[in-house]
Length: 176
Image (tube, rainbow, N blue to C red; front, side, top):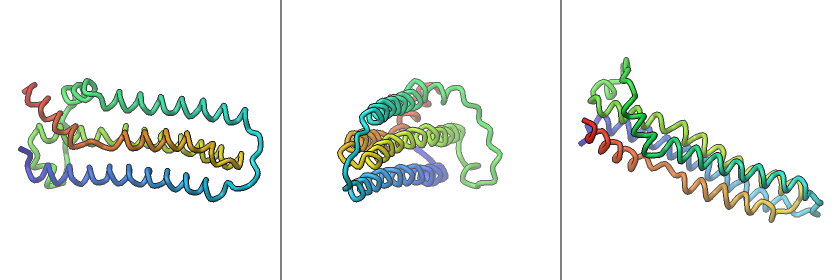
């Protein structure tokens, strides 16, 4: 059972993470709609550029999946929990009321911000590649695969902080 102080701290951080995720997803949809609206002109031949953009998009998707799988894997998170040092010197009343286990879980949640934001930025850049390509070539259809991959990865990488914290609590209890 978590304390009220822990739940308040976690709730605030989880909301921020989900808001950032949602804003980036909305931006992706916005780029897609812009591409539809502004790419009515005659299309030019950009075959070489198109191939380069596809290769870059595939590389970015692989990097995004790799980072997501590595830094949010059960093994990595367990290792993080077992090796982290508790160093808190805070004037935050809620933070000072946490137990050591809750402080570890709070640190873990803060640690999760970085890989999430990195992969979401990469996912958005995949869609932006398609937006740029479709704009340059004046061919909306070229954006569709980039948009599909970027949005799919964004939806797949929704922040599952509650599930991760539940698993982490179980790992912590097993190691205690």
